[in-house]
Length: 493
Image (tube, rainbow, N blue to C red; front, side):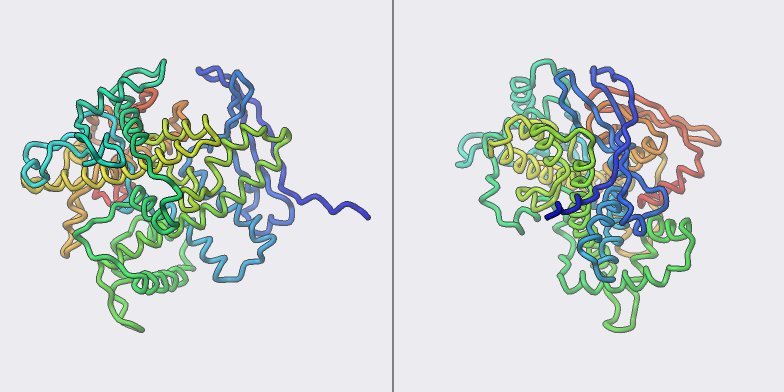
């Protein structure tokens, strides 16, 4: 009996590179899809990854040019391979395509979290907000305590002390590193055991680490989300005749118009409150990550199987840890936590160093809990400070020359409190557009290093990587700056 034909996983072209400053050999792995899925993909479709080989010979694979641009491409390639065997119907196909659109839109919601806790100022609460907040820092109330919660929780000084004592050999004792290592030391004292959470609880933890949930805003129900989703799909179909440029502007830059169009529909089941529409779109955005996790998973299976030199067991564990859905993450994959990855760096490395030990996973889950708690507290403290000082624009926004777009309804209050992480996400998109990167895995967000410069025609931004200290300055015309700022929900002047 003849052997069954081998499934075609596509081909990989290896583009040799050079050694970087860390002594790693760098190559580009360019994946081309198998012939029987080309009809699902744009002409000339390919997916690139950077392959770094360490002195020990172990390979690691990194998205290129950056995670944000790479993920939708990987999802599209995976969708084509997935559809080859699943033969998806029209609704399923549409859901997958819409999920890729929403992934790119997620970063433009003010609820999207990308905070970097890299210095003491990120942890402190301004004097003007002490009274309403009840403490002088945004650290979790149980930080440093064990499961029994006995003892005294850590303050900033104790966190930095513990971080300094637990910092890995050879790592600079910067505050950013001490903060992360201190938080990880606390997480190891009180891990969240993966088996103690059901799937819904795990997904709730992941959601709170990706999107901020304002306790003062109405909670959206599943029924409302479904109503908004149907209206959104109908709007998408109505825009079918737009050019790519027009659609991009409508979908990504005209967020208020999209919300208004969905909220004010009077046919069928009547109008929906704007705030509920907004929260529904965020919920749909989170659901879209599940689709991306699946299709990226399929893509990475194909890429791994197409490699000329198969992955070793150690390489495969690292590869699957980042790119395959993980039960302890509610079937999300680590790569979808790209905004949180710099914060989780040491916790992830601990998982890679101990494949059969569940304890690092428990520490990672606790770190995600810390991240969600600290991000929410930081927002609340900033809001109180701005309200107490009667200022409508935070210092980071002023530095960049933003002002809130005028609004005439309740949503103006949310837009007025532009969050620092929105600014960080925005300026880093500008950096990535200029192809400015450092050697850090995942190309995490850089911080605003110092004030901007400006003349009549352009704005100059100064950024630095909080992990490796890399620095850059980039210049952008003022009109382009304002247009792109608006796409992130930030009014540009």
